[in-house]
Amino acid sequence: MKYKVIDISEEDYGCEGIPENSELMCSVLIESSDGTQKWLKIADRYLRENDIDIGSVITAD
Image 1 (spheres, rainbow, N blue to C red):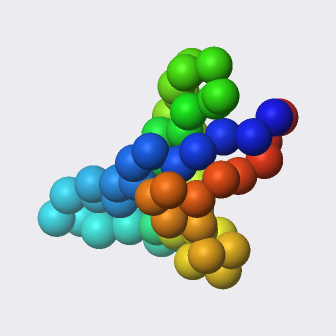
Image 2: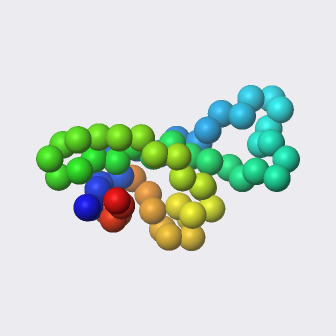
Image 3: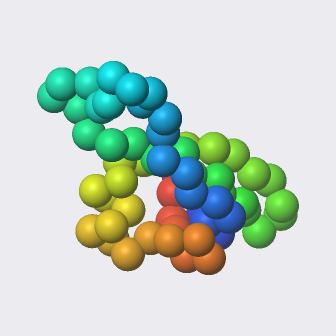
């Protein structure tokens, strides 16, 4: 199914920062063609490597 990316926000790790052996994660709001929305947690690295930004259309199961 295809989804449009509506919003992307970086996770807030507070003053402790990103936990050791972890990577920066983002909350991504996607919307299907029928208007259903859901939040996903996706690695920031993956978003950048795949040029995914607000307005992008992605395929997900």
